[in-house]
Length: 275
Image (cartoon, rainbow, N blue to C red; front, side, top):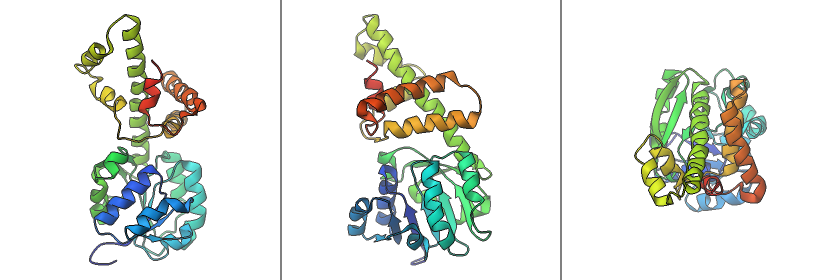
């Protein structure tokens, strides 16, 4: 810890993790980063981050570990490497979208003296770059308070309850948002079929409850890959443990778009391709 700010390790430098890391550096935190593809760390190294060769080396001398990984399998694989190296009394902030089952499995592997909160981020790269994320935060209230300055550097803290509740809340929201996005896409298809000009259709939609979803479908700065959106819908269905036909249909559409080679495209592209 230096200058009253904790030393942080951030594991996972995808679109979101990289933007979060850059923002933490800009706010004066001592930051160590790790990513499987080391080249993604180069801009952060130039900005002052320490780059670790392994997850274990990344966490060895820090106060807080942030994980921002693609899916449950990635979290499990990276945990294999860094959990044995965690310092006593470290706090782990799990910010990936992995669901409560993966969070519980991860928690069971941590030493008793290591604290854990789940704070999956709602928002995308544009928000991560400016500290404007919404953090759905589950865990012990005292532990959350202990890392609140770091959390609030990244975004707005929304308490959700005990450990795992943040991970659960993220799936609830993503299931609704992503399903609604596909509905907006089909709504525009209906408008076109009825001969309604697209600008008129969009204006009408903006007057009702789908206005926010339409705005998200028009975003050019969010940078949320279609492949990760499809993954989130699958996790939501698995967590529900029952048939969810609307979510299944939304996931199927995203998988079709992904199969056409658009998996890394921004989510808005999946709406465009419905027309």
